[in-house]
Length: 227
Image (cartoon, rainbow, N blue to C red; front, side, top):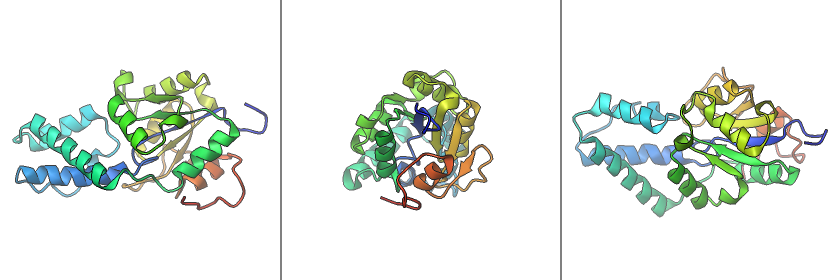
């Protein structure tokens, strides 16, 4: 890290931060429940945002235990794949531009996600982002998922830098709490759910605005960029 840069590395959450997958997941969930003649309760699917697969499985069982759980999970997966194949996997505004700016600064990047490893790799590849990241830390790789600090600590280790020298980008409170507990500077850009930013150092309306607020020396005139 040179004296001009406030951070040695950057770590991103995936869903809702880099890729606009949460909306796809919500629609896939609604369609999957309809297969079983169920109209999912308002707010239930939204309440699963940012949670790891074990937490999601527990919530599904507790609320909809009368549905065959393996078949429900399979239906959600099939609907998600169908939606992605039909519409692609859209990126969050500013994601590509910010990644390119960080790469130009020479900072290594990693992903720390609550998705499973295969799913995370699939999403990053589909979105055309995989080559930018030195490491992808997923649910499978840690004993304690978000909001525990483990995913971000492992990502920092993979990049070879102390957590306090890393900048983290998140959308959910769960993820922001994880990165903050790891000792990182945290930018939170809320996606589907509003937030008061209690776990973030910078609560922003876009990735670019958050990066600028955190002190990354991006090119001038990027505030509010959505490319």
